[in-house]
Image (tube, rainbow, N blue to C red):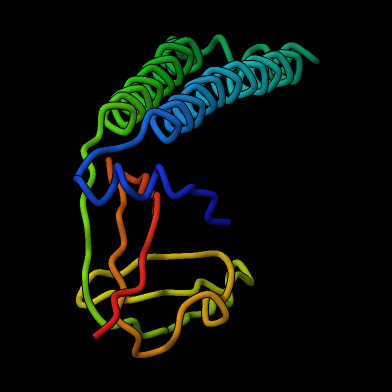
Length: 176
């Protein structure tokens, strides 16, 4: 999970993101941007498919055609759905790009303190989230970190945070 070198740690100790870590952040942001576009195209495809099915159902027989064309508001609503979906997708892509740019250019932060653990289980999703508190700062993980960090031990985490993204780039145990 944590793939940092001694050189990365030395950069982080001086308050800088190492060149290798900067490249990794760029890779992550490229993936986030690509995912935004792929998700948008899939959403547009499903929306158009749904509209085609809806029109096919309306044009299936005389009574449903009459219902569709009886009130112009029906057509206006169906036509207005397309720009509404496009606007929502454009906003989502814009926000994702903005967060990706913030992450790509993020500054390094640090948290220092004693480590303690917590976890929570979501019955809705069936997912357990694991938390590592370093002092008062909380970090969320998908795996139990109790084997990686000593409970009550003093650590310094070096991390980047931008919007929903937060990555621990390196850590070090501080001897008392």
